[in-house]
Image (cartoon, rainbow, N blue to C red; front, top):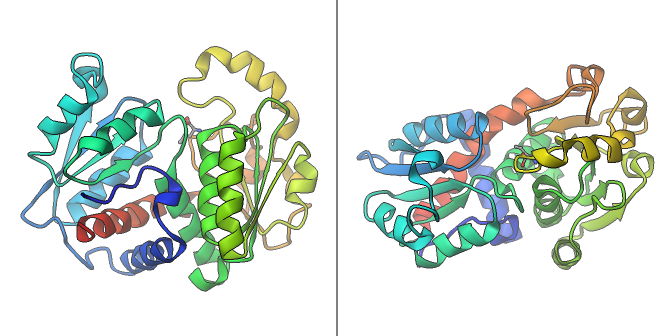
Length: 310
Ligand code: NVA
């Protein structure tokens, strides 16, 4: 059976470190390794909008020596025109890996259950694990290297019930960080995710805290992260969400509570004046463009890892 990367805890702490070391090496040398040379194709299937993910996986697959095959979900209609297993069986005869951005995590799991090639989560409603690898690489670049990840205090503020919050909890705990997520009542992470993150943190020396107090969350933090208040698929709830999350904006006052050398992360796209002020995301503590670039290096590393662990 191939290895898949469906959620952050599909990598053990040692494996996450191995992937991050490879990502670091790809950052140093874009053409370090070419496990897809041939070229072999990788299917990139998008059921939701994309910019960074399509670009970084396309460029990344090409730099690994392969051919990126973008499959438009509006045309493929996975699970509508034909079932997820039938689509998977067609793809896995022709491609070396399948990268899928879709809605429910159950769809990705259904694919992985039958796929003969690695399946990679390029964002679901539940997790965004490739983004977290990029974010961990970014933190390491700015704060003491990969060896410095464990023990850092990582604060996420905003919609703490979304995919980014869940992935920060699992991926951050795997890296041995002290992960704090803050959101208003009704926008806090599922209990099962918190419990799983706590279980991982107990093995890595990290910790997990969930709070409704954004100021407490950010105080002393080494890293502050935000994400949109209206995730893809949540558009119908936009008005309610903007009202509920209004006092969980990352502004200069909140950032001032963090450590003096704290960095600001945002997976993008960003909505200035909503989840973050322009002053913060366009300011000196923001490293969001490094973070966006690091999608490329991190995803090349995780693809290489999965292809070589068959
Ligand atoms: N939580 C956001 C992340 C976008 C990259 C969404 O799912 O739309």
